[in-house]
Image 1 (cartoon, rainbow, N blue to C red):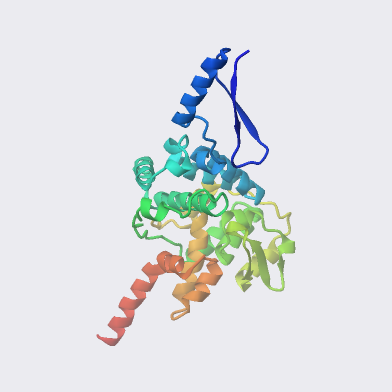
Image 2 (cartoon, rainbow, N blue to C red):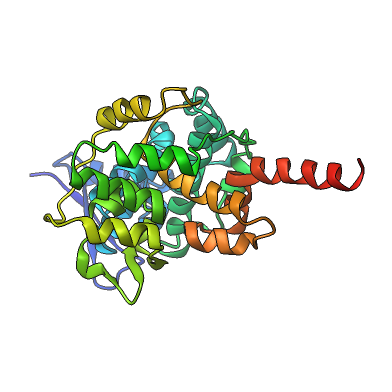
Length: 318
């Protein structure tokens, strides 16, 4: 039997905590208790004062799951937050802007600009949760802690209308032909095309749930309508990267720059519309491609606009 210090919780009415003094001597226990009171050993802090970054990360995952985040999204979120894993054992209130900066920069040193930016977005969202939901700190420190890294504008290759037609015509079977057509003539992402079913196409439009679970409609062009009408099988699709590469090389024997991949159908869809409709409002392209903002549309198709401006000037100032 040993004596214990009885300490009421200042934050929770009626709650009492007991701390063992490790001695059976009452006089010694009193001395030990007085000493520990002076040292602050019995100061009971609120959860917000003691919660570590790692504990907050667990809560954030639970929060995202409760919101209906998909397993793949949870993996992406956790991978982003782990850039601060070295700080997980530290109480949030003790983490400085310098701590965040040094840890994040060290753990993203070898990442591309796009990966760096994506991880910064995830960490920012995590700290927004800490500020707005957990209310542990008054403001998000990420803007000051993590600098922007300029993303190099990538030149994206696309297939011409003729090349797309040749690839689709050489599809190994009707199912693959329709899958490729959904990407090539409606700009669907491969996941969206694989999930497409006849009942989702009505009133002359494709009704799709896209990135971020956002619903959208895309007009069915005559070219795609013909492909839909000629297909008589079950709408159950599989995508093979190997098959696309093989068919693309066969269909375009003259060769083409870049690689053959599923997303190239989508990019070709937007690029060919832009090239065929000079002076088209970029907002139309943004809506068709379902980009989050017009900046993404410009970044994606800016190289085509650059060539158009050169042509426009040369036509006037010959």
